[in-house]
Length: 539
Image (cartoon, rainbow, N blue to C red; front, top):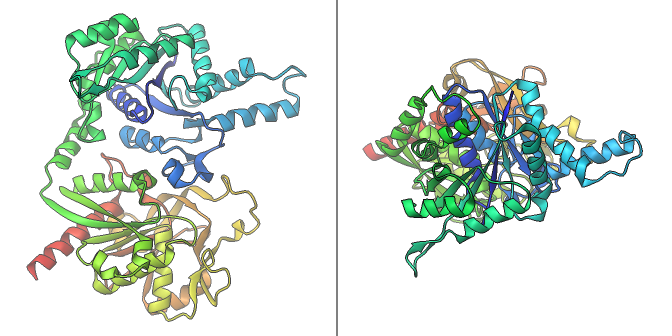
């Protein structure tokens, strides 16, 4: 029988429920259990696809094309296995399903209510993962904070599942905060006590407390928490602030979080987590032999979470190359304001990030023009690739009025244009080219050498594409079309042969990078930046 673990948060948001869930899952996976993680989001949007990156951070795309919460990126990076649309459930999706069923007459004329209809749909979604892939353990992260009105239906569904399945099959972890008051010079347990009390008001007793803290919890303080929160002493787990999120699995291993969970679920603890590859990654991450500075030119730089997967991909590829990648965040509108050389001349590489809309596009194009002419390694992702095509078309191929129709709807040379199947789309949510598609690589190109094979599969999220009407002109001018979709002939990758590293990709390679399997294009890009730095130091 599948076991269910729920991770809820108390006191405040942003404590790291996703990281704790992913760390626990990693430890259980190392013990040879088949584990997956699911996120329940309390907002009424059907998915994050239509949310502004400033509002919600990046929209993470799964293999099957679901637009999901960025926490699913953490799940995949820690477990090294893909998630699907079933791993992210929103209140909007729950209510949409129930309302559609009501319209179809599925409830036989009964009054549709939060209990039992909404909670039944929540439980169905939670258990759907186990039914589809026969997991030993399903970890479910409940978004928001205990006490939020929006989270109440999820907590009620949890209460019902604990009642129906029993405590040996359904466990609740409460991640909470133990703040340090510098004036009093002591840690305070009262906020955690209140969070546990609020959870009890929903009919749920926390089985394990994971306590975020800046300072170590003393034995006396843990005993106090155990007494007042009605948990056993060994189930008070310290989660002290870490240097990096990738330290957390090892910290939780030392705290024996996985042991406590398995004992409460009456599961075997015979296999000890080795985490050999994880420890090797961490050692390389913390002991770099070199350092490079790479500029990240984007439109949403004020919120680092808007490019979360890109930052993490640099961590993975940097560790692989035993190099500390110092990412320099540069807003594309700053470049539009002038002094492009001043901002970019001291960098060892430049990545032009994804995005939507007209704002800041010309700044990206100016930056690409500078790095192309200066021979600085360049990597463009999605909109970054499209800007590279526009820049090349304008300044090398000399195509008059070259632009993307996303920015300029009427132009003489629309080298980037709206995809044919997007031209009749009216609704914005879930209608882009989403999910994994094949890409065939030209032999001997930068991309093919990086991947080490000639056919790959990558995840997409876009409406605009390379306009094949200009393929001949751009190839003649020297643009290498190194990757195309074998079915649609959509150009996926462009390169320049006479450049240290100049690659633009229509897809999102950052979504498939993990600590144990860094993405080959990021690895090659960092390597190129290291070589550029070394060559310039010699000169």
